[in-house]
Length: 552
Image (cartoon, helix red, strand yellow):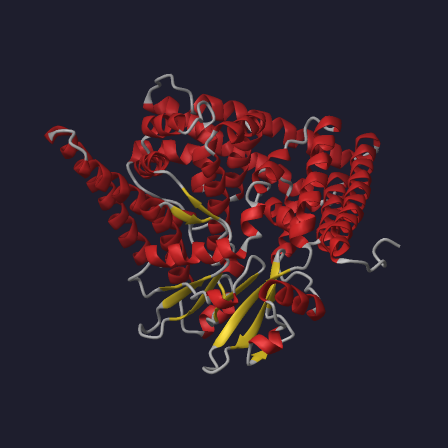
């Protein structure tokens, strides 16, 4: 009845959004209850003998892997033969764990079925509630080392187009913010959106007089007003889940998203971000950031020049354009790492829909990127940027002591093997191996099931510590981790080696450290050491490029 009532503007601006947020909170409570019942029944249900055997095998192998990893990463000095045996033990335990997990998944046991059912419930909730809920679901879809694979596979569907707002509501948002309806403001305005995301949708229009093609981003109506209520409902839900299920430790996801959401809902802020980013990347014609037309821009409407392009992970379109997926992946990694280590002004949401690709108009068979959706940016301070750069330089050189020291400077102490694995998407055991061999990479382009099991092993071992870490590291680190996750998913979809992204990050990081050290008056010996460190990284990168080109 409340939603059917159509009264004054105060009702439209406050009462209706509050009522709608309450309805969404009700759906959330209902879905959460069903998921709790599902998992509660799982604890009491009778599993098959084979499933129980495999679950016991998984638990045993996980424990053995944890012990093997602890021995291998121990600070106590051992001889080369002992180190080799420990490394082989880690690899063997990881492969056994991966095999047991695959077998358990293959039989479609009850635990897997419950995970799948719960994930589908969550997907339906996010789609029904839209907006903030989709944003949270997308974030969860990136946590593939913390959540069961059933959740990752199911929630990844949220990266596809969301449900659009009606054209009537689009017209009203434009009228409320710009003073006129779109058909009055523009020569033409398509009522059908070309893209729709969790917070807004994009329509094509044409500018009067010049006929210039425009992209008009319009926020979903009432989203700004109802987002506070939605975040409150989500906070209450996760706190309740943490109380009822102590093993549930994902409340930090909401804590991370909450302070950023108001910025993302202010399209004037997004317009300013895009102009700052464009100024930092000026001079590189491989990157295009659409120009903002401020005359038609407001907190809920963003008007830009229209730029053609296709999704960064659309491999078929990449091939049809005469481009190589590997070149696209390397260019994407270069752009975002340049932001991190040079300007420190970072686009923190580089998922595929925000990075468009097209053939470069002037360079044959070379890609050009169009960066869109600049709502979530972070300006990291120079001290943090340089500490982060030193960490990546140490990762490139497999300098275990340097990794440990840099992580400590970032507030991460005993969990430094996990942070290193999360950043590089490689097991920390491999970094230890490289520290002994001196080679940058000697693996195939894809992670094996054993590699993933090793990283999950660190994640599970330090799960509680991760939560503490996320509360202690600078907040800017959380956004970098999110950016890293997004880039990793893009690279994986394009078939690019995890090591390739690591090499590009290490290249920009080592240059940042080298350039900063050159500015300081540390003396001749310090400058010589700085030059030597940079030279080591440079030579390893060139050797890797030559090696990968040979096998490409």
